[in-house]
Length: 105
Length: 171
Image 1 (tube, one colour):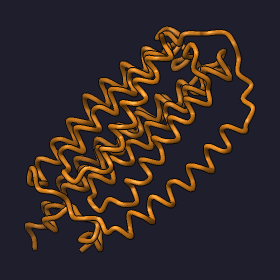
Image 2 (tube, chains in turn cyan, blue):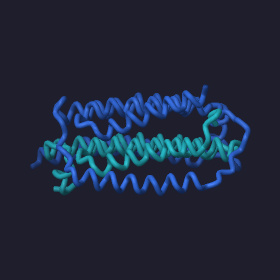
Image 3 (tube, chains in turn green, blue):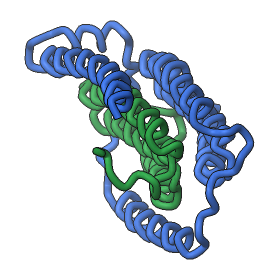
Image 4 (cartoon, chains in turn brown, purple):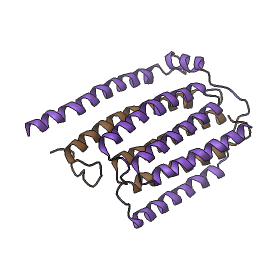
């Protein structure tokens, strides 16, 4: 836990980060930008897990290790999604969601 | 002192995050994301979880950022702004995000968290033992599942990158 910072402050910070990510997720029409917004949301989740683990249950490691798994999953998801985006770009010459009407052709 | 550091880092992260979702140039958006990830790594270090901070720096700030930069350079023309977002769409998104955020903040500030008082740093030793033990607080099964997942993602990325190309040549 951080000296002099209450858990509510940390959770407020992660909530702000999450909803900034949500705002980007809704407004953006570029596939890469949507993925970037998703990264913001996943990062705020990982901080949440660690903060609640550190403040409320300091004796156990569950939250700390779950956030490690979140990072591994986010990296895997990013790699796959970027491979798909590259293929979409090869097919449609664009990375805009409006152009991606179907995945199969 | 630590609280001042936290507020500085949180301010940097939030400003960079807002610029990430609001800038019109995609390459700048990726660079602002780098500042967000670095600030979050600093917060992990503040919370006495050094291993997580190192993982954040090496996996996110190192690996994922390089992937993003490569894909942006391969697909976009640098300096060209992305398609304008309609004003109405932005207002709808802001209203949705702000109302849900208010709900979440209301819940957070009204919930009584049973906060413990002792300060326990999470060392690499403890994390390693927990990841590899198969006792009560062991995580050997999810650890192995994650390794299989990473292997399948590796195979999947290669298959996605190769098969469509062959298909296109047929057409």
